[in-house]
Length: 284
Ligand SMILES: [Fe+2]
Ligand SMILES: [Fe+2]
Image (cartoon, rainbow, N blue to C red; front, side, top):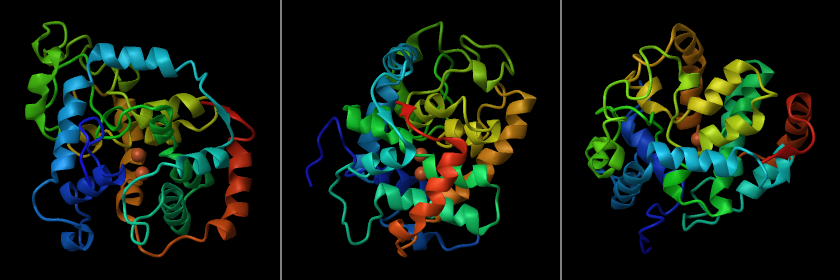
């Protein structure tokens, strides 16, 4: 397929496939989940080049102003899942899971491990913020590892060399270790790069428990939860809550199996679960 400069990934899952390559499941031969060789695919590399160039402090503020008022759509959770499923891509329908199947597989493996209902629902909804793509947002402003803006970019973020093209790297307000922040200021006071995590957090923040909100808001913050590269901005409460972010991560990354979930059969259980925490229409 042709790689277009604005949308370098063949589909959004290509970013996640690369995460599994970077962070292979412990105790399992990494090859099981490697769809390709040692080197990152060109599309993934181009994707990060755009992401790191354009995710500036000002860019995130402008996206917050555009989307956080939640005036784009009114939709229930199941409807949002079906809407997300419209994400058309060039991937192979025989082997690649649809978005709805990824959400159900994640939720089902959390459920199989006997976790609380809010945790199962978190698995079901965690990627719904990707509907940003259907509002015309480019891939680099929807997916990708997230990282703080407004302070120096860590060299433990994937492809750190691409931050040379980010104007904030040369801005004295933003390029010191703490930038606009203070030591251990707490993540609720830190602006992360814009994407599906933060957007969904805004949609459900009044209605899900705090542990769930941490998972939703920081599940793509690999420099934080996998690399521990931002302990200097996190406070004790963040560290405690990151236990849940880290507990969730394997369900997100390593439950992609070929066994397709039976969407129709699972629907009644999940409709009831949705009604318990997130009934009716939500503002998107
Ligand atoms: Fe995600
Ligand atoms: Fe996911």
